[in-house]
Image 1 (cartoon, rainbow, N blue to C red):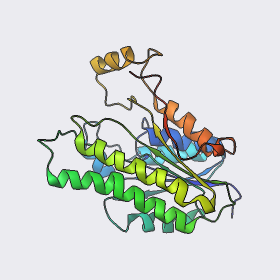
Image 2: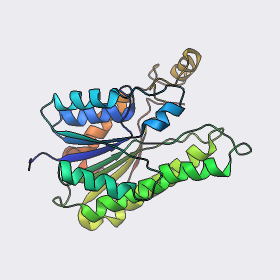
Image 3: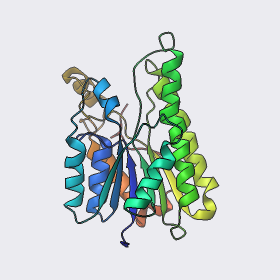
Length: 251
């Protein structure tokens, strides 16, 4: 077995996505990388899905001299977390860091949200997070202080109710793990990267977001990946139980 640490990055199916940027950044830092993705979700979104992108991402990850594996999985299913960890342990070994960048996001407000949509958002954004965190805690075998949990959140709620509400639940689950996994020495944090350009912004929206950011530009996936890399490093281990805003001073 390799001595390299192993990271699980969920929601890494698009080359310009946050998950893909995180995977490449950690691979370059010497992590073996396990990816999860679910193409039917991308197919249903305006940006669509390119089935070749996952393999291209794996090729890029492995170009840094590390190993990778990819698991296509529907996180709305209760047994998905167990399946994911079983596959990673078979292909790579025991996971040292869990980075959750997956999400389900379909815009709707208080009046227009259906019960089915509300439940699906919570199944993927909140319940799957809990199950992944639980599985990680049950299986973690690393030295005290080396474990990491990082989740990517959002505070967008109005007009995007089920997404924002389920992300809020996700925050609490991850922050709870910082205390409940204290005996394991696992540091757990949440990152709010603000509005990040992953291909969904129109030209007008980019201009608006840029004007509301103190650094006069929109957030990019690499910005989030840089912080995740630090949190997963030895130097970042002292940061624990925090919800971190890394949004360029968005107002």
